[in-house]
Length: 558
Image (cartoon, rainbow, N blue to C red):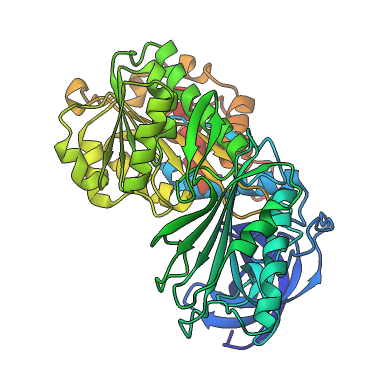
């Protein structure tokens, strides 16, 4: 394949995050923004040793599972990826992606991992409690837009007044804001911020809405390059008929070069700069820039999973309720506070000062005096904490854990660690280090925290193997084993079923018998003789041999 060459093919699979794989006679092609079983036309943009990378030109034929998108912006807006897939198919795709990413980690350990599938979000649409809309235009010189970045573009904006992952209050606030500023923009009385030119005024509109109370915060983010009276904007919002209630209208100034909402000074135009949200019976104070899970109802499912993992450890007597729990990368302390009733002390560490202050205030709101929060980098703060943890909760940012911090975390040698990951590839990288240092995965589950997008969360329980000093190594020859009792542990059907469940492929009895013979588990005479006239037997491939060996280990036959 060559650059700019146009090829067509069928998407065989979609790998995380939303990277379609097309297999051609000339090699593998990776293309973003496609769905399984679509036939597509792709232009090659990069050619590497093991693959080519292409840009989607056209969908020539839709997948047999295709459904009409419920959102009028799908295809233009870069927010959602899977709106034309049935929801159950999307769940299956995300689960398969996580399992594929974690497969090397599973294969590295001999102990069994209980894979618990994928948990669904309680709500599929209108689930977000926070949106950051951007000002701009869809084409150069076009009308003012307010919404999301156009698919595949850093600069063009699509007005998403029909977005399906937010409720109608967001759409009404977006439309009212655009209606207010558009006449001023057309008269050239106001401008939007150009990232390339680094000039202009209107930057973002941040909207947060509490699911449980319906309270709404609206924050207009601008530069300081122009001065405007925003009383009219405030009045336009307050005159809206909404299902929720606006409790605060704010104006934040931001002259930073980054295309992100950064607080460089905020004034209150109306009301207050916070509201309260409730999760699993606890109360949390939320400000415009507080970190908080953006799908409140699904966050409850996620946190119940974490709490359930810990409860199972308590119920089995593996940990006591008089210990210390470290909640590292604790954000506003949500997990720490949910765990406080079952621990003697919970210590949260978070690098964002504002998040730590919010965590402390939330703990006071919930009358939790055994939660302590420290502001700082996990790498540095761990050296300053005198207490030693009995259990560690990890909920790091998307890039995972700093390798040096990971080494310090492992050095505590706690028997159990729960890792909450928002990016499975980062989790897989960190798992390799954990496994090299004596930890194994025992339970894992995916969470569809953000339906219709390519994002997926994973919760993983890690257990520490006992130290080498507590073990001795013994060599036993197969002739010394009681082979009859070993054979009795599992039938061929059980071995086949175990391999299918854990490796997703089937193995015939012949291969199982060959592997059993290799390990000294003798079969009846002529049991595995082929009926072929030439007397040749197919031999078990290496990948299937490894899977069968793992099954034999599982059933304690070797």
